[in-house]
Image (tube, rainbow, N blue to C red):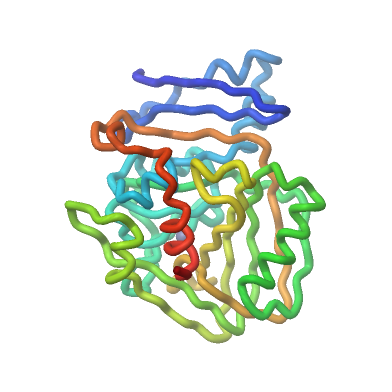
Length: 288
Ligand SMILES: [Zn+2]
């Protein structure tokens, strides 16, 4: 198996890098030996796998226009039951919830993604609730970020968090995008013409969000990234704004990070250290 694995130990955190491709999916019996070196205990192995943020490629490669799928949906499901991301050709926003992978398409509809659909960018983990925060009178996305940031400051700002907030939302503003054809444009350019926004009132559903620590700026984006799917799984997308009276945010703290890359030639020629912070801010928030 053409797999390169580097283990970096930083404080108590384990960061690992894996090269992978969709060709490898379906034959994933090989376990990373390095994770067993401390105890050789299979229980520890299982725990480690559940407590890892698994990332496909970089937000920076997606932002620069690398939209080819790197792994299949069926493979992604082995690494988590909650998550966010997108699909080949940025064909909609991904919401992973309770082990199911939902695809919020550019026309505003949601479908369960096919197992053979491929993924250019995603973050998933297995959700094991570590705690919860009661939220009330949240009038916009910045008020939500403020409350969640206070929680992160208290629990530890240098870990990863996945949260889910199930409730009734007075306002839910989401976006998705139309599938792109090659040659691919950068994501900010694609969204200029092909982003579609949807505004819902009094909708029941779940916000799924990832928090990345500040030092993740080169691989992802620091802070919060929110997606949404309705309880009836018919509406969803990348969340731009919201308002709600009362809901509980359940959180899962995660101390490990694993990243999956591709040996694809186009990907290998990309300048991934290029600063695309402004473009990321634009595609995440609609702000210039
Ligand atoms: Zn998003």
